[in-house]
Length: 61
Image (cartoon, rainbow, N blue to C red; front, top):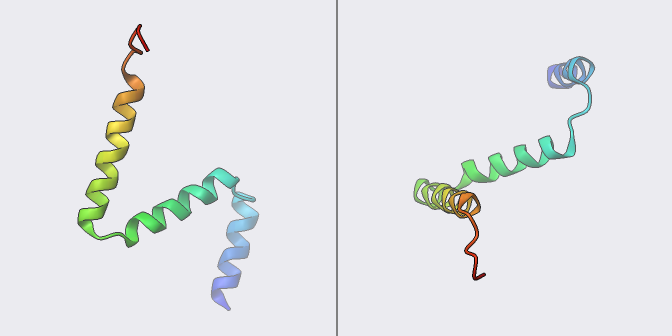
């Protein structure tokens, strides 16, 4: 029952987490379950997407 006490204490101290915090933790848990090669591919994909967003849009698009 210590886990329930610990959870109750955290809840009192921190309050209710936001939905974005919960979603971030779910994504982190899923990421950690991936094989190292898959993690690398996910990181590369995110980096590529971030780079594409940072590039100015082409005037002809």
